[in-house]
Image (cartoon, rainbow, N blue to C red; front, side):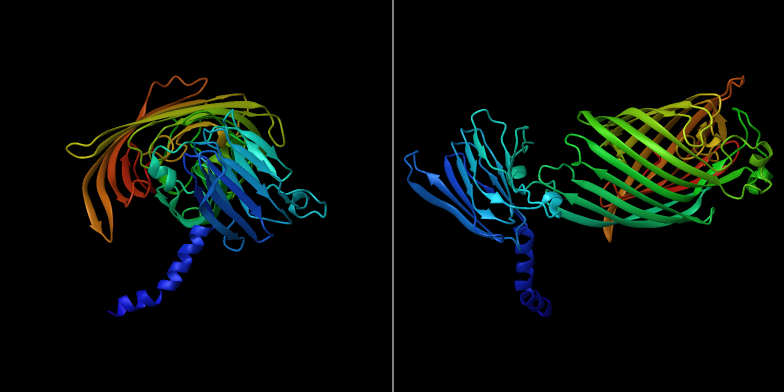
Length: 520
């Protein structure tokens, strides 16, 4: 009874909050018949929208809808016309106003905007410049337009809803923003425990699928390196029409490399490895912009650049890398330009059950900044997934990867390497270094049972086998390195929330990996 009274007492507050959420971006759906809409920008703070039926074209108006919108509550008004010979007239002379979007239908529509919304250049310079607050979308050939300085027109085909439910209650968010907290957790035998996280911001907008932009600022600490990593990523979908802009900026003191020497059969002394004799921890500053140009659904051409400054920590320590002092050990800044193609049809990135990933990229490092000699890196990988639902949900994940360098003077940390989560588990990071690397991975994932304790989820087991090798110019080795292992995983609520733990045994050691999602 007490709970019911509390809910009753809070009903007005809840209703007000619900109204405020609905009022931010209002969708007005007309019918498939002819309608007349006379939108008036009444003042800086108010817009009036009356929707009237045209009775058989005789001009007798019948009121269907009328609402006076307040700028304190509403930022966008979206009018969907559908079929019929619709007419929209927009008037008013104001300094600022609510955004109005008019989406035409298949009929012979007329859209006339005589309103003026005065503004300033770049929204803040004291230079008068009409502000665009009317947006018209119509790819029909029969539409007649008369648009003023405050209006814009887009004749690209609109993304059509797949059914009526999607038309009136779309699953894709199209207004406002959403803050989330992203965990950044993991454990490997090389890095130790890594703990961190940070805020993630999603901004949504009209016809922006899946969002206008996504930005994340994450920070974490690694126990083995005893240092931090801070990373900003931005994924912008509306800066350039029809393209994606990506930005990465990272400052890291935990970039772990190992240097055992060149070749497919470089020697490793176990006692020296345990004493971190082969270990190289780098401090890195990286800035990486890229432009993704869609080719077809799930595929894009990616053009990018990268500027990275590196400094190897404790260069005077007596370690194996200091006895050879390969190129790249001293502090240096290098840059590259890259181009590639990426095809990604996976259903869930971190726990895929179907689809493929095909990613091939070429990077060119010119003699720029501290780079002594130009070189080229070509790398690629392919992944695919097969799932059967009976008797238990079982997914077979397959991955193949290759990398090849062209050049005579390449920083050791840019060599083609094998070892670690990204190539061959069961071996230390960068265990084998060469000019070319090949790797193949297979993992079987079996969901044993569902559970519902605090939240629903799936408990499963994995079994994996992996193999690979590197090549150098004078390497005659025919050996392929292999590792086998298995592990456990938990999926929480949905497949994208997966925690996996695995152990991979190679002839050299058993190595442990814990991460959000799977390695591939």
